[in-house]
Length: 100
Image 1 (cartoon, helix red, strand yellow):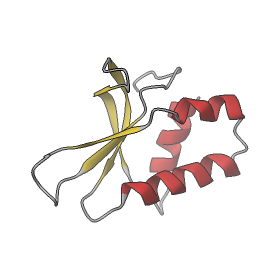
Image 2 (spheres, helix red, strand yellow):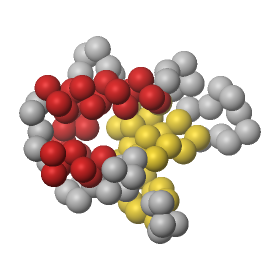
Image 3 (tube, rainbow, N blue to C red):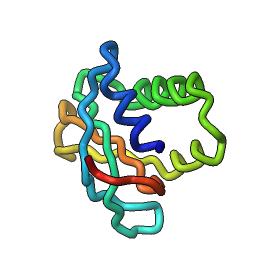
Image 4 (tube, rainbow, N blue to C red):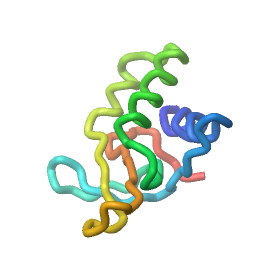
């Protein structure tokens, strides 16, 4: 459910964010999780995107237990040495993740 809402959020005309399916990222415990990600271009701020996503989900009146799946949200950069690199916000705690 949450993965579908994240996809829906990314595809909103005012957002047009790229969804990254099957992203492999680390959890806070150092384990690898395959999950959904949102590609954030270098001219975008990932904190703004997270705030927009949160507002979008709140407007949908999503149950708090579903929102808890956002805990552990993490960010990776596509090129660690580049200030102008894209970032990927990913969600290792998604319980319902199924790639399209």
